[in-house]
Image (cartoon, rainbow, N blue to C red; front, side, top):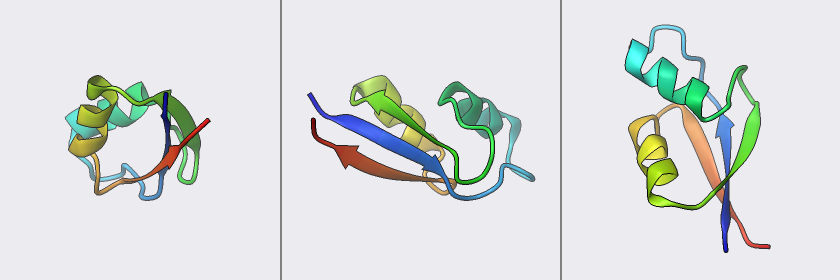
Length: 61
């Protein structure tokens, strides 16, 4: 099963509160912080919501 590496590339300063909470739920705190999640519909939906703030890489294991 594939995993997704999600990296915060833009600051959440000025972002709407809903997007800030989504970034926090993805486990991202500071700019350039990364977290690895399983590839599923819930994570894909969260990433789609904040796609202007994050970079996503697919990791095959």
